[in-house]
Length: 414
Image (cartoon, rainbow, N blue to C red):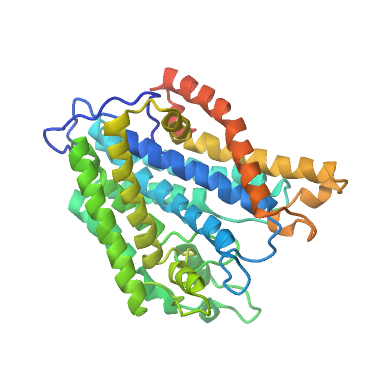
């Protein structure tokens, strides 16, 4: 969400004679259309997830196989792409910035400042958008929080050799499920509160209020995305083949490990009464924190989509209406993230007021809305289409404004 923006019309991909390192400036590196498309798609899907959260009439978890339907489950499942795409491509964008001639020290400083800024936004602007009140007993530290701290850690990692950054990121992704056996109860005081070690465990790996997004393995996801950067500097054909190969490999690894049910996710799948629900159980991997299998599934699909976008760009170019629509959101991801939350929550408040409800019932988180509130899934999809359509011209204008001021001190922070 806080990745580098690209022009409205990205430059055509060209081969790079050698892969630059952050300390070795390159004359110029093209913006990668498939990155903007992937990021934009993630933003649009994220809006679907948040519209669903604020407007659904389902009073149960979308992945609860005892109560969900395939349509509700898959609506939630496809949005699992969002957070891995945000954080992985934030790392890739950091590498691409370095390849355009940014000094390593400048890159580290920018990552540090942007990371701190994102943490501040999570605690203030983002929190207010979710809750519409100032009661800080209500607080969720979510994706912007994880993105910010991952950038702060990457600011230190960029001084390492690329293979070491890759090893750090991939190693964290592969091994973090070894920590699943830790129980926060082991760190509770006599009164039930967490000792400092318990809070540390919660921040790092075990979700506990207010930490929804523990930092492990998201830090590793961003580091892996940074290490993926050189692949995105290859020619378009080489990028397409490499992304396809990595995507196929990750999906195959997911299918094999998930079938074996021995490692990679704390919640094993099981056979259900109906075959379609057996498939849903197979796909129902753990997001909080993201398990190895969750990341293999989502990042594998991400690589396949990047490969498809490269192919689409080579055949059709970047000027199609759908491409322009998606890329616009991908160019201003943080701006879109902030305004869409206020817009969706505000819309829920207005609709509730129009229905005669006390607006005070909507000055809180969506999961505390009145039990009578909500609409069917088709209506949720219609609201999603309306929200993205209405926010598109706003994002397009801001993207053009940001492009005109590219190089200004503020552009990396919004």
